[in-house]
Image (cartoon, rainbow, N blue to C red; front, side, top):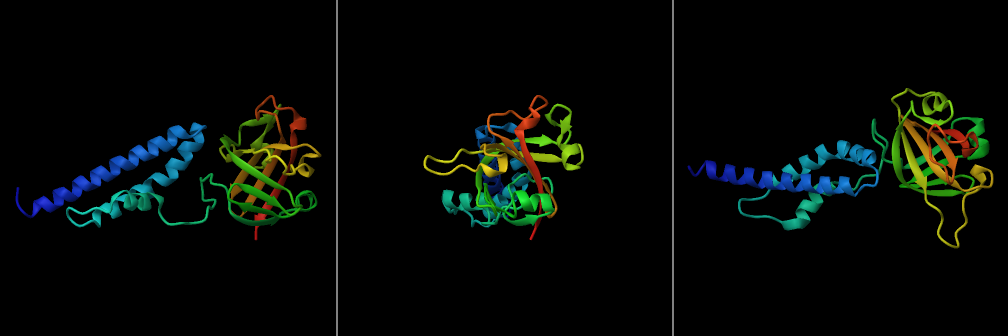
Amino acid sequence: MSAATAPSQTTMKRLAGGLSFVCLVLFLLAIEQRHTVAAWEAIRHDAVPTARRVVDWAASLPSGAADGLQGLKSAVAGEDRPLAAERGSQAILRGEYGPADEATRAAAGSLTFVRAELHFETGERLRTRPLRIAFGRESFGPGQTFAARLNAPADAQIELRTVVPPARGQAAALTLCGGEPAGVAALLHRGSRVDLMLFRRGVVIGSETPPSALCGAWSFTAR
C-alpha cells in the first residue's frame, strides 16, 4: 500500500462507519413509531440530508482524529430550523393562518400552529400527536371521502392527528365540536392553504364513521 492511498482508505473507512451508524439510528427511530406510515414519511424526507451531513462531518476529520458522539449527534440533528409544510411533507406547520372564508372566520377565526399545538383565535387550544397518513380517496364516513369534502386529489395526503386530552385541571376545547371534546384533527397542507377537519372524541376514522362525528371543516391561508 502506497503512502498516497493510505489516507484515502482511512477516510473511506470513517465514512462507511459513520453511514452505518446513521442507518442504524434511522431504523431504530422507525420501529419506535407507533404508526409505520408516519415513520416512513419522516425518514423518506430526512434520510438523505442526514446522510449528507454525516458524510461532511466524517470527511472533515483529520486522519486519526474524531470528536466523538457529540460531533455525530450534531451532524444527525442538523441546523435548528422551524417546522414547515413542504411538498409531500407531513410535518405539522408553524406560523399563523387566517380564515379563508366567512364560515371559518365565524367558527374558529385565525389559527396558529405552535409545533404540535393548534391555537385558535377563540382561545381554544388543541395539543396533538401523530396518528397516521390518510389519502384523499379514503372515507371518513359512509359515502364520504376526504377528496370530495376538501376538493382535493385522490392521492392527496391527509395528516390525521390525535387530539391529546387536557391535563387534569385544564379546560377542554369544546366550542369547535358543539360542546364535546375533539378527538381527531385532519390536516391537508397545500401551499399557503391549510384545510382542517375536526372529529369528536371516541371515533375511528373510516367508512363506518357516523356523520355526526364530524365537528366541522375549515380552511385557512398563511398570513
